[in-house]
Image (cartoon, rainbow, N blue to C red; front, top):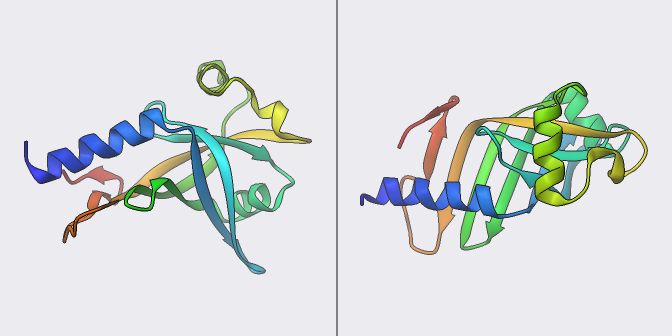
Length: 142
């Protein structure tokens, strides 16, 4: 298996099996970083937070976020556009609740399910790797 294929397989495994991430957002008041639970159905990240929280307000205003999944030496970074999931999308709501054991309404007042559609995905692994990019401009490059 090529190094690129191995990197992508490792990244997809982390995205399917991990439950927690660090989500970075930003606003005029500066950057913001929080740990959140997530799921990865259909090549997108789903996470829930209150729409009135700083994170919720930031993603609703900017429509952007950066997520980091995994340990420092085995990490996947996902950057993309964020939007609220339609409350009628029972499939995504169910995928989230089944995997994590709670729903968006359990995260607090105004709990909202958000979808992060990746535009860029990078990996960071133990050994030096000159080409960390797996996805650029919304398309897999490996």
